[in-house]
Length: 81
View 1 (cartoon, helix red, strand yellow):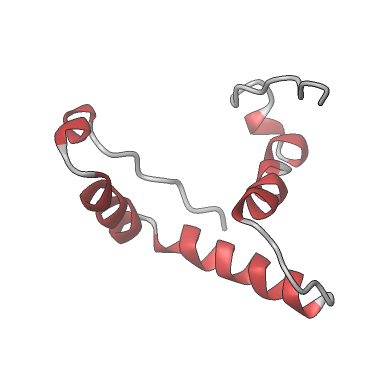
View 2: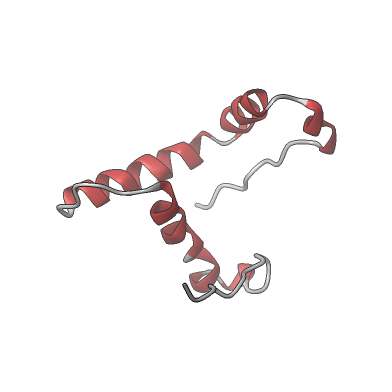
């Protein structure tokens, strides 16, 4: 079963970043659980270091694998270094 994320109301922009995080986490504890699960998988694969960017790139695969998200997320071309 897929759980729908609960987005904060627009008026939350006046709250501190910490308070917005706490509100989001209270409404969506499964997001934290998914991040921890991916980090544990990364470590179990033998990695000695990782990054949140790396974990979120894995989570971004959702848009490629779930038909309902095609075109939903804004993406940008990676710039050459």
